[in-house]
Image (cartoon, rainbow, N blue to C red; front, side):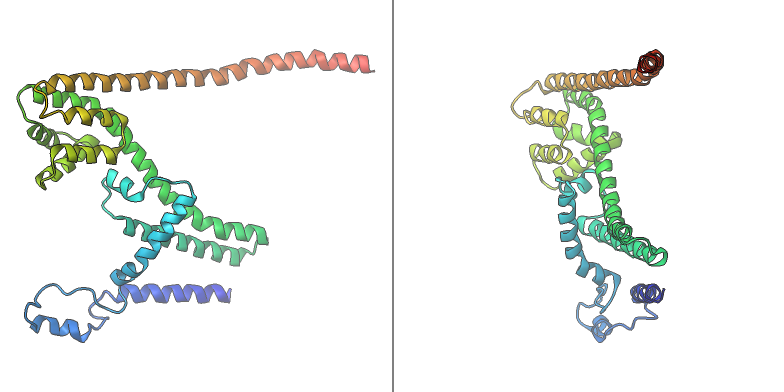
Length: 301
């Protein structure tokens, strides 16, 4: 119990130090920061140059947490890069922030598990499993949340792509250029495709060619229907009948969605028969087993 109190006290001391170091009334600024406003060109916002602060702590722990998290994710079987998944779902944090949060939760899980083991004193094997499994579970829960969000985003993009392709075909057939059609869809569309198109338009405003921006979108989304759609859009400067080609591609994408919907309905229909079959066979097996057991008893006796 004394060890638990000592560990809790150390953790409380470190946390209070990190929190109070951000308060100006507690943390005295260094001499360089106090003289900065009086230096030429020194009226800018002073940086966080304190010895111990949340920002400096994150900058120090970030690379280590990112390396450890990447290795653990690969050991767990996650092959896709975290940066790609975070960019796909338009996450507001970067890889380093996510890894620091992930490792922090794992350390907190280990501390909580160690405290529980110290208080309850279970068998050695159970204690080791709890102490090792709690941080691993906390790490994998965060990784699973990102993976599920990425899969949901790809699913939404797959379902919305036929409608967006049809709208793009109508705009191109009406005389819009590819750039203006993409901007119009980005302004008036919502959902997954609308967010991705706004990012594509932002890349176009940065001077990236249309084909390169669309290929970046396809490489980031990793949706087969979009991989087939981008090469058709790449023919913008080589054909004058791009609207018709886009309409055909939209119909093909809609057929893919319809085919998957039929497969899902058939799969659910087959799943319905499983409890029906079990409910039908179980009474028959019982009725067959009763005379069989009775016959064995009589002949055996």
